[in-house]
Image (cartoon, rainbow, N blue to C red):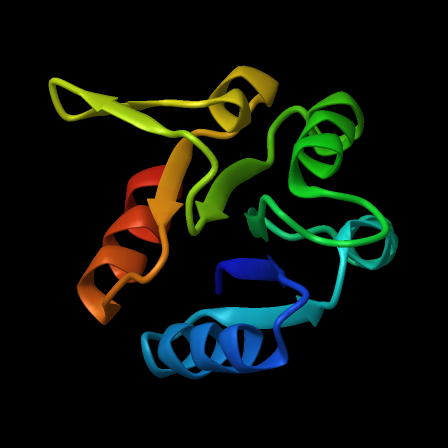
Amino acid sequence: MLRVLVIDDNQDVRELIQFILEGAGYSVELAPDGAAGLRSQRARPADVVITDIFMPNQDGLETIARLREEYPGVRVVAMSGGGGSEIIGGRTLSPALEAGAHVLLPKPFDLDQLLRAVGDVSH
């Protein structure tokens, strides 16, 4: 079973993602910020990490960079509600991708977008 770690400072967002992914057959762990997410990843590594970009304590960009250093094989989905992303020819360009994320998932997203993003990075 594929393990997914969800890092977001908004509890409602974390729990919604958990509900959707567990319903699709994934095992899901939750963390409220990047530092807690890294601790969780170190204790029980996930196959896929979904992280928000804008969080207090340790933001998603730092979290992604640290994940890529410590776990080069982990697949990363970066979520963002804004922050200057550009979409050109269907490809998202952002600092999150430069930091090592594989996919950027814009907020708000629907169930299909979330499942497609996780599916895309887990194959």
